[in-house]
Amino acid sequence: MPQIFHHSSNTLSKISIISALVVLGGVGAALFELMADSSYATNQGVMRVQPVQFSHSHHAGSMGIDCRYCHTSVENAAFANIPPTKTCMNCHSQIWTNSKELEMVRASFRSDESIPWVKVHDLPDFVYFNHSIHVKKGVGCETCHGRIDQMPLVYQKNSLEMRWCLDCHRNPEQYVRPPSEVFTMGYKPPEDQLVMGARLVKENHIQKLDNCYTCHR
Image (cartoon, rainbow, N blue to C red):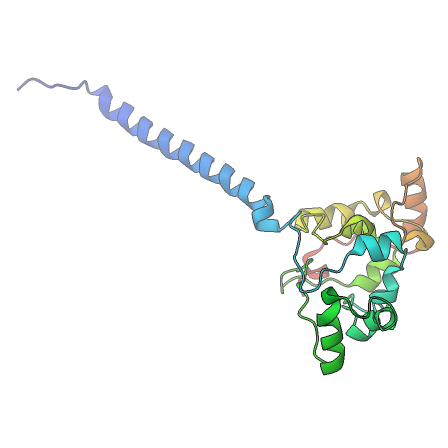
């Protein structure tokens, strides 16, 4: 019986199969990379609906309440605390006392049970982050959290991926502010940011920490 296919067909078929696998692998890797950077994976830009619709744009923006009035531990502790209900009632025992939207706040105060707030910036358990050291070294709230004072519902402004953190850790002079401007929203960096940043890095003994142990302990 005469041979139907030329001997080269075996080689061509092998090349075709290997090429197809390489292409499929490349497409899969590209899709994985796109998914890893998407808001589906990082939660970047996803607004969180809270049990009580607290508006940061109203309280921190229109009324100009300082971040530290509610987040009292941010300068001295690793965790920027969620304010207790008593903090809310400091004002709301006097104003909007019969608002239906604030009934859960009043109920929480009466029962001494915490409101089940939904965490927005939720780092993995294997990541160590200390708020106080960043604040003390001149990293502004806005740098990580975005314009909180313009958010009716808070969302995660940045990806919080490791590469995002490392960019600041490796180049702190591009991001640090004078200590007096850490809590300023809408801060405008000076034209000589790199010059000022280099000076602040030296004055505040800011280290370019990019070893694993810095965040993974």
